Each structure stands twice: as C-alpha cells, then as structure tokens.
Length: 198
Image 1 (cartoon, rainbow, N blue to C red):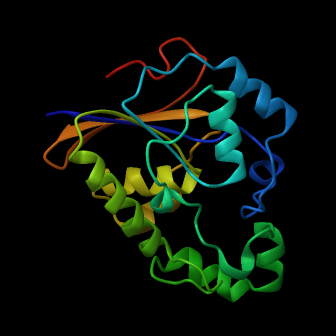
Image 2: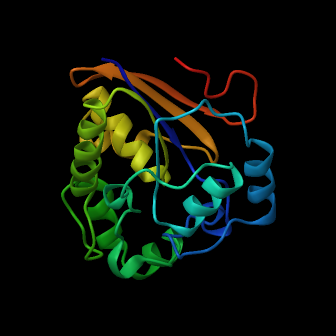
C-alpha cells in the first residue's frame, strides 16, 4: 500500500506579506486570482482536508476542491497565543527576549500558545494517520504545517523548522509506506508539472 499526500500552502494575503501571525484575514485579490487560475491543476484525491483558517478555506474554494473528507483539527494554524494578529516586528520590539527564546528553543512558547515541538508533534500524528491510508490525500494547510511535515519526514532537528521556506500556493508532495516517506518539495501551482502524481 502506498500513501500519497499533497500539501498546498494558502495563496497570499496581507498577513503573509507582512509576517503577521494569523489574524483571520481573507485572501487578497491577487492571491484569490492566482488560486482560481490554478483550479484544475491538482490530481484527483481520495481525501481532502482543509485547515480551519480563513485563508486556507478560501484557497481550497478557489481551487475548486470539494468539501473536507474529515476533521482537520490537527491541521489548525499554529497557536501563537497573545501574539496572534501582531507582526513579528511588533512583537520583537515589545518582547525581544521572548522572541529570541522562541527562535532558539524549540520547546519554548513565550506567547502562551504552542511551541515548535508541540506543533511538530501534532502534525506528525496527522501524518502517521495518513500513512495508514491507501490512495491520495490532499490538504490545504498553513505554511508552518508544511514546515513541520518537512522537518519530521527528514528526521531533521526541530531547530531546522526555521530553515524551511514555504511560498504561497505551492504543492509539497509525499509518498510512502510503512511510515517511510519520500519528499518532493513545493512547486508553485499552475506551472508546468506542478502537483503531478509522483
């Protein structure tokens, strides 16, 4: 049995461009148009999951994806506690020591939300469930979820989380069996060869 997973990062919105911790903002006009232009570029999926964030739901709708096949609680956005809705620059100016700790220690959550370690563990549980399912799973998820998957699949140290860039509207593909995954890193949707079946 081979499991295939395609992770799609959301199209752009003002929060992504300004490095703002998710504030519930909608896609901007350019992001919505890019997502709509990529509709039909994804292969058929046996299961579709969508993070509960506004930008992920709007991206999935613009891509023409059918409703979710199951709950996506483990694919929720990173819980940033009291930093939610603020930019990284704002938080750094107000709490420089807390930001430094957060960036240096994967177990730290000075904002009162989830640490990098907690996020990676949550996402790993979801991916383990996917590994037991035959066929293709497609999920529209926040960039930090993609980063956590990449770190986990590669067996990289949690500190590597900060070294993974995930562009808007990109496909990251996994295929594997028995908990061993192969990784094809994100290609922008709507370009030749994007999200082809592995």
